[in-house]
Length: 130
Image 1 (tube, rainbow, N blue to C red):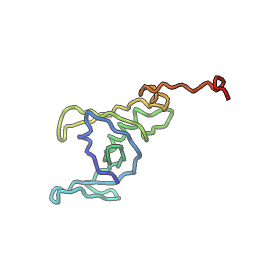
Image 2 (cartoon, helix red, strand yellow):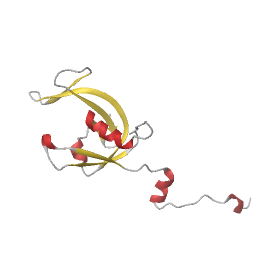
Image 3 (cartoon, rainbow, N blue to C red):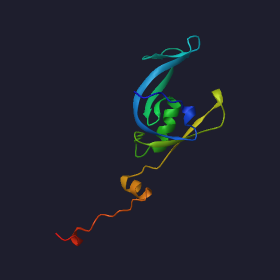
Image 4 (cartoon, rainbow, N blue to C red):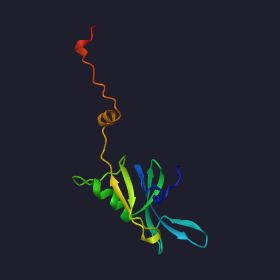
């Protein structure tokens, strides 16, 4: 299992969603200095989606998950799997910080070759003597 990554450490960077592992309810216990996890909704707990990314496991709130899904919504479907997002913030800290996700255009294997300078063309089989 991957290590957890804080969203704040991804500001100015990008991440690729590998898959969404579901959600759990979590609450910070200040006295014990640890996160308490529950499978069921309880008072004081927040619903957090656990997202496996190329940078590690990321916990996202329902609003943040919606902010990932909305810009990739097309024809009634929204799929963030294997999508890459840039992360920015409003520059604030603590409770006032807001994160913004910008989906990067999907790159097909052909586009990837072109972007990396690999412009090899398919050989013309009629030109090869057999």
